[in-house]
Length: 145
Image 1 (cartoon, rainbow, N blue to C red):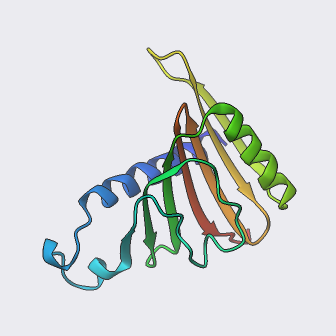
Image 2: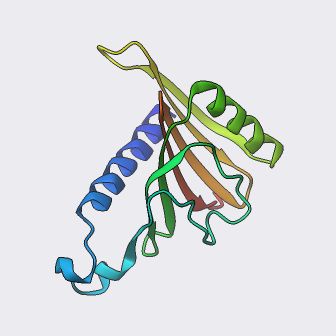
């Protein structure tokens, strides 16, 4: 269980790295890989097949990307306090999402807990990470099995 969440966290780190290295056509990336990942506008909640029907969380979109090759959407937000995070989780529960797996860890040298959740409504899977003021949302379509 913990190993799966660590894998998801590693995937998020890779996505963050890809996002920071992504360049537009002027950036020199060529080939089909260059078109698989699209960096989306910061400050704007992305409207696409992955976010359709999801409640928009409070806060500001810091970065987002759509990865058509791996069929997912990743969104990083800032400005969400713990109360707003808890309210958003309650809203997701009202929308039919349930927790598949949960991991919380105290971060060494810090005075806060890092929370990670894997949720599903049967159609979509959400991997959520939260530390104070930072909220990450990784959305994919749920896979049977």
